[in-house]
Image (cartoon, rainbow, N blue to C red):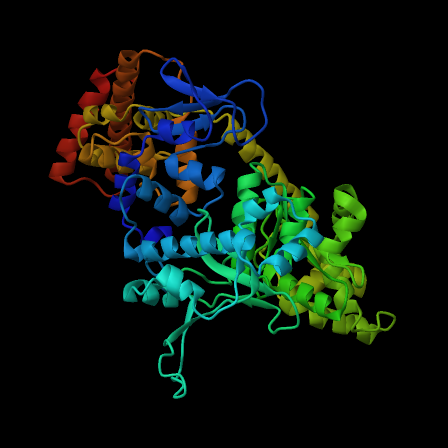
Length: 603
């Protein structure tokens, strides 16, 4: 989606953002020389190694290697997507992300709707403690043992009896507000008027006599509600409908509260109900979320895997719970990436997270989480229940059942290990099995090479070695963009047969067209993640030279060296052509000029 946002807009947002001010509001910084320092928020440390440069508008940790601009910081620190982080910065700068950045489900939202829903949430919260008929809800909350702190954190409320409370209190006879409340799902339009009630209003409240749970987005804005009825009414739980603000396949109840409670999120527990989330929070288990009347979707999982490396699904232990677990597993197949894992926790019959945590307490409940079944264990155990593993036909059927699922897993070590496990269960050679499944074979040696390559990349990422003149020149340009004025026409370097010369020419061309770019805004022009990561490494590469004039002189020497290399390269090319087919008069003249230059200049 980021690719659809105009580059000029991203650049403008970064130009309006002060990265020191942004980071300091979240991680207190102290000035140290020309930079600002702090203990890194992305890994535990006691000695500050997290550096933020105001001139470059760039941060870098010399301990873990984390680095980037203001957008990257918000993505990593607040666990946001690119568009979400850009939207946050744009709002701070008084700007609005262009429509092109949103898909059809994310159509531009009306700020008035957020404000109205927050008013509704406040109204419900007030009614919980003040309404004359709230005693039943209060008794239920007391029975559940919820503290005032938890009630306030999750904004629990009460929708009182009556068909027009929200209509009259929040709508207040204002047609525009009433329409906005209808658009957000809080009001329902009557299909036809009752002739026996001529004064009947055309609208009525969606929620009545329910314990209310506000559903919040990543900023803490109310976007929808869930309501639990107390008594025998139906349905037991009622959610807001899909609106421009609320898409149940994308949102998770309790996610905002989780992120507010925990800065470091190691794992997330996905449960089935609002009350489960709130009850677990009462026992200081603050890392649970709930789906909103739908199965866990791939969009849910992508959002969760941006937060942490491990997601545990918690379901009832009955048939319905295991079916829900299988649907979640199916949606997780394509979402699991290297370093991420999903596990499955099935509760004893008749128990839910609320009842179990009351019996066993926090330590006991977390011990049950730790025993959750692995992805592969749940996957193969479920399929093996459908076949007879004692006979060849049964093992063959297991392969057939597994095939469409394994093909969805991202190519890599996890897919290879799943295939290896299937080969053990089906008693078939793994290479033969991979061919039957239509999956590329990855031997142990290739896995070892991948791991070794990853380790080597990690070492390089932590301490890149600027060896070649071109790499050194790129590093200097990223740190001192004004050096581009020394280079002349970048096109003269294009034909050089040197590593990184293309990046160098692109960088020179960019800076000559806009000499006022800082490091962060330069990097924003690279959408290729590999190239950007490489440039980020060079942007923080320490130089043996600290004097800017000395760096300027060395950069100029590199330009001269590259010029001589191009001359030598061109001379060698003409010399080969002379031997093979001869030169034209123009080429002979160029050949003699180059020969004279190369003989009179120092190599």
